[in-house]
Image (cartoon, rainbow, N blue to C red):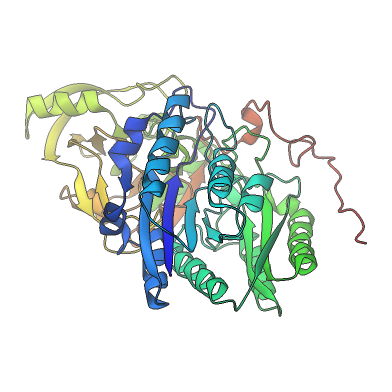
Length: 497
């Protein structure tokens, strides 16, 4: 038997004015055919799990297409068409298939198709017909749609945030595909869509309330006839109809069981909705708390969360810390212009910089500094441990490290980079354990790496395109009513027959 593998992944932040274009995929990942296996078979990504799981079951794994772009703005219309053209050509050259494993993100938005993942999965279903099994994975930040559910026989979401179980979920999906092709099971999936938007600050699966909710999903998987049970936390930075939480259950031959179990989990989310409202700390309160703590502190810059699409050059926290003369502090800023100025000055020399704050006026003004260039590096490294995102090779472009006296160390990069690995620092000869404070542009994803060097984590409600204050974002397409935007929202499931 032969099973194809397709991954098209991007998390689209509709509050960013610039689109995601094809070059962003080319910079990150855009491969077809055998190159998919070469790049991802050994990765901690679900596609690595697809390859390994199929081969363990004696099924030939056929790489078709793998495309990924860093989270950013909506996928441009011509980019959407180009991706579909690449997929069509790769699928045509794949030969006869018995099934397809897919890895959408679940929160991709394109200009022509707001439900981009539902669009390309439905398109694939039309091309392959109703008899061929299509199964795969979802990021738990997916804004699940009815189209995604209808297009696939089974989808399983990662169960951790930070996402450390991607390869394991790929193995799970591959095993389910093998059992289906052998005629052992007949997967049917159903979903429930409670009108709840879960604040990003509440989405750690290691802490309540998500920990308890995920435990209920785990217990549900032990029920006879249930093949998979998933919680979709949602991605609040996509202003689309599907934005919000959902539950998804796959059962063996039993539509009613799948729907009842999905509904039970949906009602659990609804009952715990008040616990899913963000507990937000502003910059002054966060710094007061940080200075009172003993040991190293990670200040998570939620408003400039690169993993949610933000520019990565926000300065709000660094400005506040400089004003209070706190240190020693580390921050990474996306700023190609300052990288070039630092390289021109050379190691050991002083340079005048306007660092960060250049992408827009939503993330703070540039830091006006006199700094000494301490390191220059190529910005490329490999992370051997499982980390959020599942990838192992990283390239943030030409990088400069500058020092502002003994108080502030700034890493300047020429490409945006999400802070998922401590190798980001150590590959430039920076010891992350040497800092009292580390400003890290994320919410939960960086914790998997930074918990090795930080005793405390404070999630800071900074301004920006990924602000944790959902009330500060202007939605035009979300469901109405929805909790917590409309706090008096009422919801109940229709009576079962």
